[in-house]
Image (cartoon, rainbow, N blue to C red; front, top):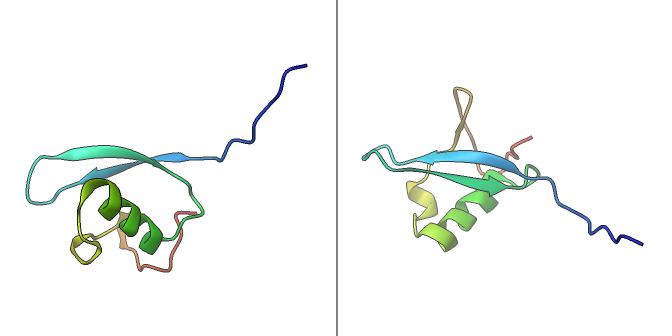
Length: 68
């Protein structure tokens, strides 16, 4: 019998550095808050949370908002 493991849905998110031409793509879980994503980016890439600005569409996001 095949065994299926639960898979958490994830989505690609593009991250750009406004001061250079650097950009990366992260796979993140959509239920995470912007604050949690800032902490993830800090742990994985070293960008301090206070230096990060997350924009969805044309809206600057607050730390409590999720990606949904």
